[in-house]
Length: 401
Image: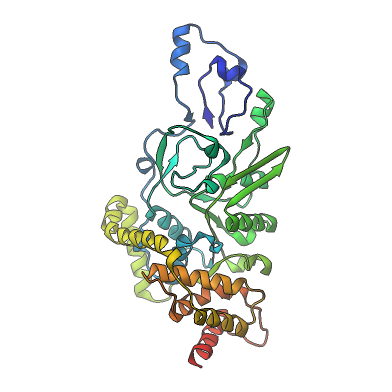
């Protein structure tokens, strides 16, 4: 919670600031005046701070996270996360699988891998300095003059299952409404996730209307709030990551179709892989700094690959031959609508950018087809094979003809 030193201007100013999450402390609300003019000047000069937070840099305050390059196996999940990071407009990644298989570890490792970004220090939505005007909040668009900036790590925001819609999208700031008679917006979790990742564990247990809302915002990159006399629009550009165990319930097909990529992961069954996972995790827990340093060079290589892929994405071309391949594959699998083709093409374009290429090739379609289409297939009661096998079979028939 943000607190500002008491001063006459805070107590009497009724104008709404362009950054509506500014707070006043109890002494300002109760009108307590300082005992002397000297003390008043000292307190008025106090900067706006976040209560309970250290003033140390973020990189100092946060513990080291497990390196992305040190993750053993789970190649499809790691590739899907990288592709979604290159093109966040894909609509997020759905990861279904066993517990304890590195789902949340992979998300946090990828976020830590990405370079820090410059954001405006006084912006409640952490608008990036490099953002185009249409991707800035109203306060940043209206601000003029030189502004203070800070370096910020890519956020990973966890969305608890018990979250209400008000907590997710934001709501009326009741404190300011009651104490100052002002209508002000209290940003929610979507504002905190702007520019980073929104992670939902057990997404299949989240209320359907919240999942639908999150998917809408993830696709548009903007959170629109029309409630309680408020009309607010603010940027909410994030990569939505949902994970869950299918044994505990499934998402409705309409919601499954809205996710860009879907990955199925399983607990490793071979002894050498299991041993290597345990060895690396144990080494990380015993010496976090040393373990992270050992994989710093490999992580730096992936970071450079991601940055180059984002810069190259707009130049990647898709030929009519690739479009025909995607359409024939979706027809053969019987997917409903055209979202399958669109996602498949976008994911293949991002995959080509990751590989350092400017032209999408058939192999890019083949390597991302399962992640793009498995959650869009209708269930065939007469065919007991998995969705991945059906996709591989269709690809072999189409590409071999």
